[in-house]
Image (cartoon, rainbow, N blue to C red; front, side, top):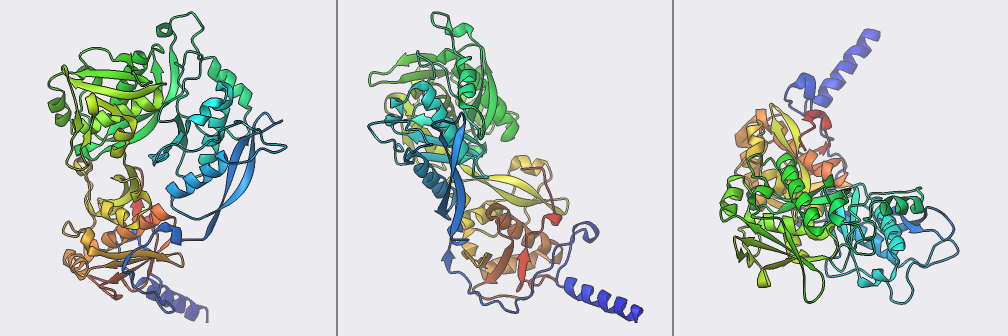
Length: 515
């Protein structure tokens, strides 16, 4: 009897696993698909969004307390939405929260609102918030504490780990002269706000002393150009400055942008941006308020940047975004080639930005900002995680995630042996529809897509299938994917994989560490 049970168990296991082929079966066996016995899904015609995943989500807002040394939290329930919409809604709830016996009233008179048509940017784990000028009614210490509350609240989202706060597109200085940068903030739940403010005050240049002789170390958001004119991305780094004049701050940031770009965008051949400067950055006052920083570059700056895979327009946008986000009071940046100001930012991938008088304002520069998604490409027969740029709205777009996967590896990734798991001949048009239903991702692909997978043969079928499954699941938090071809489910394509079932997120088929 015991022998019979062992035989039956072995047969059952064999039947369960017979629907999947494998690459390196002994190490990376893909999970079997689930049979479609009770599935009643309809192939999507068109695209859906992640807001369809669930109805509500719980968050906390953090506010300065009336009698507490730290922040006071309140629970809120929001309708589930994409990250951008959810974060902006939560921020709106925070700035409109009424004072009570425990919550301090930070502003009297004008209500605090968000500034501009796009008051929030989220990219690379960094969220930048733009408040209206009503925020200037607060004292410097209250403003700083309120910014800590904003950062702590927004870091409730797993995708956000640091926050910048601007007022009407400008960074606010935290000393009387308006020169001390606040820098990029992180969450501080449970910490004493007065102690945090004292630490910030300790960085000030004492009145009457020379700003250029007061060194500074601060967290900054560094925007850097992506390879081949794909826009710009950002990352946070601790930056050391020799002094606190706007020129010294600008020079320190420019050096840090070069280092960050080389380490994160694979541009080892990109020249040091500082080496392209004819002289140190020059700061002047604008007639309508705010400061201007002028950067004068060598005549061969554009060709030097191109040799390193960097686009001039994206580089100018990245420097403008970096300087205006960190340095207090900077309203615009002027970049010159020799003595000639750059009056337009022209690139193949973005609409041309016209700079009146050669002045690039932050709002114009931010049109080049990209978000990113994690895609699963292939290396040595297994999947590996890589980050790909997408538009700011693309992070919440199911289609954009698959399109980023279809683009395959960039030149740097190819040098590292990374290959495309999907056929190079499939494109966005082959995605007929993609949506979410009952927690399952539904993907409708073209007949041409099916034929190309079939043409690759069974040895590449597993990586092709799970590159899509893992990419979608990794970026959405869902765990099941179902495929259709021209609106119909197909049982077999190139080999033994049973495509008519539900595929589950399979991290066992991937090696991490490249993202």
